[in-house]
Length: 140
Image (cartoon, rainbow, N blue to C red; front, side):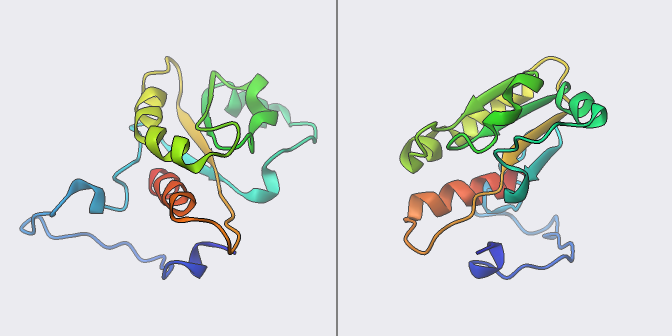
């Protein structure tokens, strides 16, 4: 399951005209983005136990991780700062703290990247799980 299961995925860049007012700021695709470049970590790189290269360690040493359900906890020792939206994977807790946590990541001295996990949803996930995935996708 990927975003294409829930959304039409397009790689074309589209902008709303400056003359069109948004009904709400949350409608923009990058609404949740921190002012530090944010990247989504593919599920294949989550919970990594493999040895990191020196280059990967150097990148992580200048990065912040915003995690969800301990998906990226294996990288915690290598980053400037780490925060899990919900260690237990509680979507209600995570959804209520995404925005504040993204703003927190902007205040980490020396951070030049933020990493968030790609969340793979099962068919039985609820609306809050989808909301967390959407917010993190909009941040990346």
